[in-house]
Amino acid sequence: MTTTTDATANALAALRAKLTGPDPRDGITAVALLRRTRQVATWSTKRDAETTLRDLRLRGLNVDKDIRIQRAVYTQPFQPWVVTRLGEFGETLLMAKDGSWVAGQLLPQREGERGGVWLPYESAERGETIPATFTHLTRTAPYYARAERYRTKSNGSCGRYVRDDDSVALCTCGWTELAYTRPEAQAAARAHRMAVAA
Ligand SMILES: [Zn+2]
Image 1 (cartoon, rainbow, N blue to C red):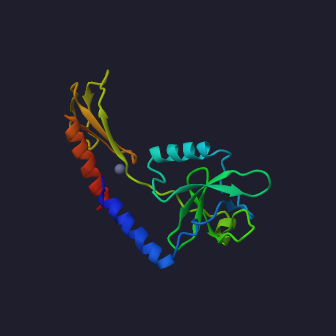
Image 2: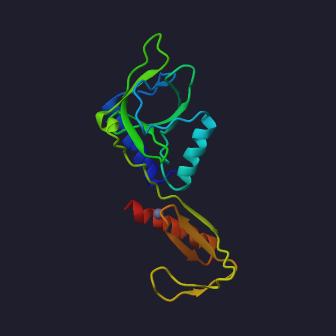
Image 3: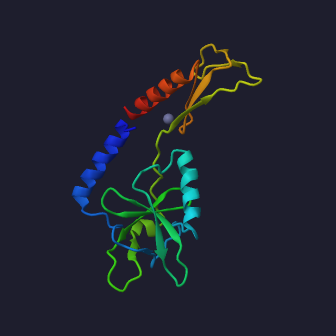
């Protein structure tokens, strides 16, 4: 499904490509971490990096499509993995463990080199990071009332009794809404996404 958010993101990506030229991550075999900063995270296996990214995404963080898990090199023979994203001005961001980003420049890989050299910006060397991106990701589920049969509305108005086929819509931002049916919950989730996108 293509959402408005996707269309906007695609348009932005196209515009950025025009302004900044090719993605510096293309055509390199690894990110060479010659000057490491404290925040840049490395993972010893690709699977570990994927797990970290998946856990962040369950919370709506760093859902962006252009995020890549790439090989890194620094001291021999250790070849860990890093998570990368392209910044707005062509900079290459490397992910920290908490999902925030460390800004730097990725140089083209020259012949004979084991990777493209990544140089942290001065701000990054001072310890500054860019916050993780956040996306409202909604889902719906059956609402299992269990012992709690009476549910108070979050807006403070009077609540109502919960029926067996009730559904709940949830978002990664913490928003929830109780509905009588699954389609109603899905509609509420759509309405929430549109409200936050507006
Ligand atoms: Zn939300």
